[in-house]
Length: 351
Image (cartoon, rainbow, N blue to C red):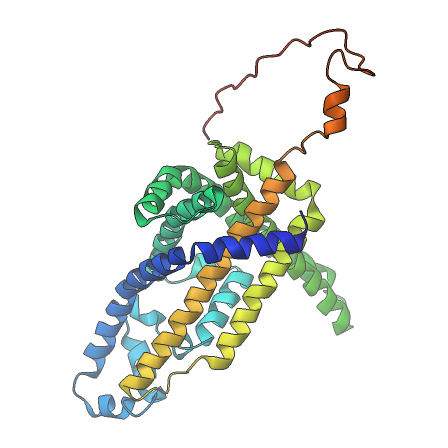
């Protein structure tokens, strides 16, 4: 299967299951209401009916923000002007690329874990719907999600360990190595190239972890596998044997995600909303972008599942080969029927 065919099939699969995008969007919105409400209460308690509240009604005020940040609690301290508009995405990308995901605010980290568990649950229904090739009802989607949840959760735990190793072990060691190599270097271009190579290696490792997780989920669903260790090993082997197709498709999907990001960065409103209409418009634009991210994430799943299906499905023998191997036909080297070996299906260990 070509990369273009995998993408086309993936787009058709996602559009066929567009109701799932809406379901996940609603679940995402409801989960986000919890920290948002807590931060909103803290801001309301800070303002009350003061003159500062009237000033903020006309736009952002940095003096109030400094005072609020000084007295903010655990979760409220995460509020920042960059959390509005596309600045929040830049903050997220910066934490992802620099390995700060494990060093963020504890309350925010807890909600991040909750979101990861929720997405792990929902992804089971997504993969099962793509395998069936027909849209799922809400009840079928929930049942499929529950059926695959524990298998996907074990896999997510293994991948999480991999992320921790890359962020906390590989990244810092590479940074120390680059610092040692550049200790006596005068040319800044050499220093830049070494840092660029180290960053590229870390990003490659993160990409391999991400696509290994996706292909492992595909194999779990397509082949009804249960062992997270064995299926992760097979998914990694699949990527190693087919690096051009696997990484090529992954790169194309990343470019689609970047395209949506650029569109949102051009249309996203900032913090200067002073009317209910402006606030609602900002909320709508933000939710549309989140829906595009959900659509893109599902496109990752669908396209990579189709490529995985093509790479793991043995080609059917041609008609000529089938005839030539039939006992009693001209050109056949078989003197009689071959004994049929009973297939063995040992119980796969659960890990």
